[in-house]
Length: 466
Image (cartoon, rainbow, N blue to C red; front, side, top):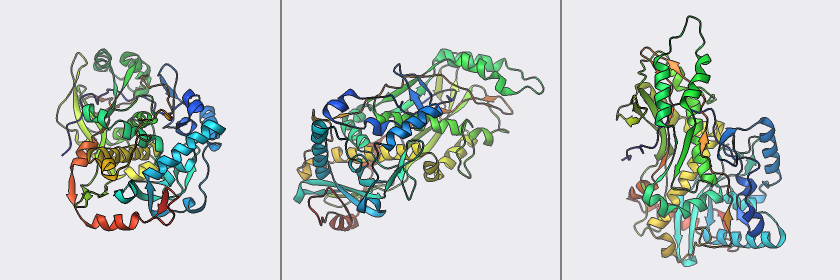
């Protein structure tokens, strides 16, 4: 069952920006006491957030500067870490100890957190969670490969081209389970009712002259619509996790509204697909991304868990915009918008290779499901494992902090159909990991994977290949 979309997940015109952390963002505490992220987490999707929280597009020089900074920070994997494997196991107990030692080394000598810790030994997905009570440990496991830095600042696997999991996102996921239990995790871009109303009034009065290019209307549309608000719930707004949600949301809308190409065969823009469709000025399609998992398989004793599924799907619904500018979910769908949502869902893995921000979103959702599973099923208690460092209950570590995204100026993209104008790309991101974790089936074959994965040839190493 999919929960009804949050009513906050609305906007009326897609903005021209998707989201990247400014290369000038810093975290003073990182230099003082040791932290996770810093320069590692600066690139998220291609824009800059200034100190006031306003978003703008990153210049070519800024992107080059960012990539140069990261080249000095992202160490290339060596030895077995440079190999692609179907299953790599990570001891949370061992990684936490390694992180603690790295923090002490940073405090004493100024050395950065090792890349193998920051990038979770090259994990691409988390497919298994195992409790190893004999070692007082929790093991996470999944496919892994060497990582590399792309020119846009993304860190991806050298074989799959998919983004590599990040420690700081896992830590945020662990630290926000109880917050998410109360209000969920979501991202949306909210226009004001007044802005919606002004835009609708403007559109009703538009009469294109023969040969007139509709793009000439964009300045007036932007002025009428006004600034929009970036709204985030459930996670710290100054975290990399939050930036990922906002970036993925914006890139989805940019693709839908033909502001950027998907570069994926078979995934055109919604505008291209809907040029000859009927559009009512008061009805606007809204898209949002949500969790997309199969039932969690578990052993009878709940010591072994398997997580499967694509991770992300795109959903859609029509919003009705009143004369006052208020948006209300109609419960209906636009057939073309539904087809576009289905195409994006079906092409998601390929899209993630072309635009890694979507793979970053899937990674954060994977880790949120894992964190929720650990808390909801009391796996740390069952293992006898203290996760206080990763769960943010220790003063020895802080995550990198960046200016929180708060506002954005829209750039309109639109198409005139048979009955009116389509100018919207509404939506956002909604993560309900509790719903995913609550959908369980018993399959003791998962125990076979556990028996093989928890065997450690070298007890001093916090990761190993299964």
